Image (tube, rainbow, N blue to C red; front, side):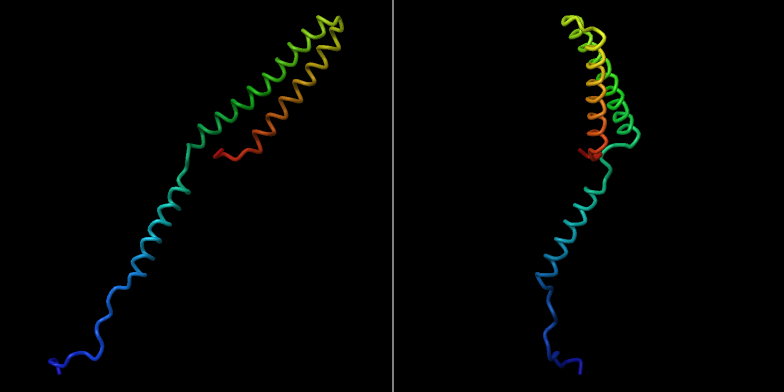
Length: 106
């Protein structure tokens, strides 16, 4: 019996299985790259907070200075300052809202 040859030839490795394993390894590598954290949370949050603070202070101070200058040269000083300050606040809050709506990876 041991001298008898098998009725069927042994199954060879299929090229499709090798291609599937290669594609699976590439997909796992891409998934690891995608899930790897880009930056540490404390540093990114610190930068984001500083950005919001700079936008608020820049909008307020910039609007006040420009409003005062416009009011000084047009001789409508308190109204020019108030309008400039109001516009500075609007711009500052618009920048803060834009920063808040941005994804962390962008």
